Image (cartoon, rainbow, N blue to C red):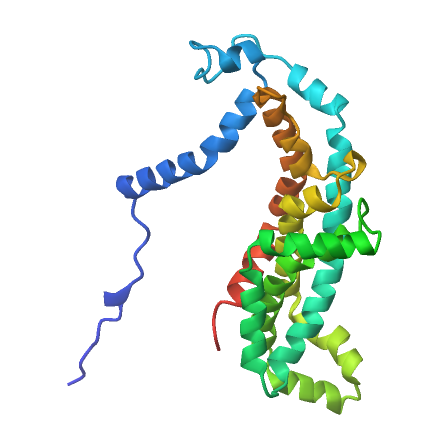
Amino acid sequence: MTTLVKTNRLKPQGSRFNPLSWLVIALFLLIMVFPFLWILITSFKPGSEIYGRDTAFRILAINPTLSNYETVLQKGILSSVKNSMIVSSITTAYVVLVASMSAYILARFTFKGKRLLMGLILGISMFPQMIIVGPVFNLYYNLKALNSYWVTLAYSTITLPSAVWIMVAHFKRIPLSIEEAARIDGCNLWQMLWKVIFPIAAPGVFTTAIMTFIAAWNEYLLTLTLNSDKAYHTVPVAINALRTQFTILWGEITAATVIVIIPTLIIVLLFQKQIVSGITSGAVKE
């Protein structure tokens, strides 16, 4: 006799509607989005409603106004956005280049002190910025590089270590057989790097570039210390300056925040698939 085995016993089940799960997700999204929503709402409120006892916590403004945006535009917030864009772009370009070369060596070559070097790179990323601000300022003062875009070189202290670690994880996932095949086909080291290795590691390179750009965009302390000239102020420093001796200008701060969030928000929305792909591709060890 032939025994018939039912194969439909392990059919995949479709996702079921779970109200509790959706409620938790909705609550989480509300908590995450609410600060940005409140900043947007406050940016359209006049000062009397922001500080008023009965109107401070109103969701919608009674008399919405664009005066906060007009004021921050007159104070040169767009110039600060331009400075942040220049500094962040330059930092991203050279950090990704240096991190890619360094990470490839750390991922492919074996040498004495490799583990110690990796630990040192990770340790440098944990240094408080206040420790290095003094020596960096003295160095820039002696080189006469204060109040300039050379501040991008100082940004490497906060962006390069993490960039190297991200790139090492991605280079380790590339099989050595691919490099051997490239050498057999006649590629030298540089051709192999630029035509074979880096294209394969593109998700990791792209993720490193985005994270470096955002870190440089949000940097505050180094720019405040090295660039005291208002003409070179970046976005965080410009927003911090929106205050008087006794008052914090919340209306102008929220309006400026909305303006400066737009560039990074557009970048993240346009390249979110590449960012997620880059993060997840380096998360699994094969």
